[in-house]
Length: 313
Image (tube, rainbow, N blue to C red; front, top):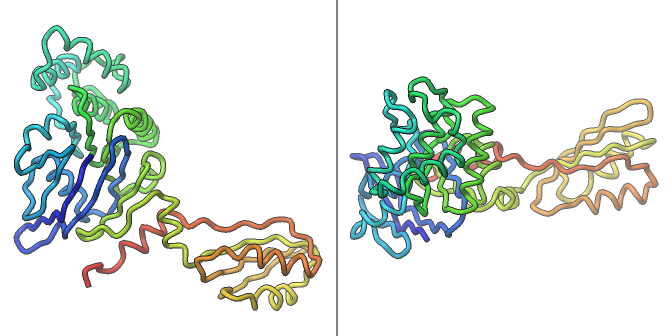
């Protein structure tokens, strides 16, 4: 549905986007993840027509931003990091004003506004001035603004910045509901947001895509080292070290415990799961295995590994 083709953007001598190629399918909730200054907002501003690329192009449903920008804009709802609200207006009046800007016929506006009030949870504040609303409700109004006119694509730039934990959960639930019907592109540097809301993750670092896939796929692609944790009963510590520490691809083993129980942490340096080999050794020694778990690499760790250093060197 959306395709970035070799999109590059310079601000003077600074390269903000460096030959970005990306295809986004209809109905996906895609998370653009990266540290501050990675190029997330620049990507969104080019897609929504606020910026021109230095070179490269973006297409949406076969339409090109360099030839059909107005048509593409009609397909997109955009919520920037700070929702552009008229704070002296009542919420209903503000949404009615937005509906007019979206060329929604007067006799259809009320229906649009009521549906958005239900979707975004705005019923109880529709007749309050925007400036009286909490940050969370202002973001909801901003979402309703972005969704006015029923756009096929929703672009959200850091939609939960500055919200408290309860408000973040509320906005996250709304986004997941919206994602059942629309293509959603969500930029953030909050890792939990990506895991909770997105079908697919694209990590950008210094203007380049350094990873692309689901969170499970990202873990698998970077899983070259992990730990296996064991709880054994009536197994001598020295025997554990000698029996399990010499397995191929085991780079370290730590054993501690008391009262006949041993806690074992095995560091494995391989992209293969060797728990079956570990279990075979334990079974041969006739030790009692009470617990075996493999640590799943967190998205925080993956993010750190992929965004440290300079990928352009």
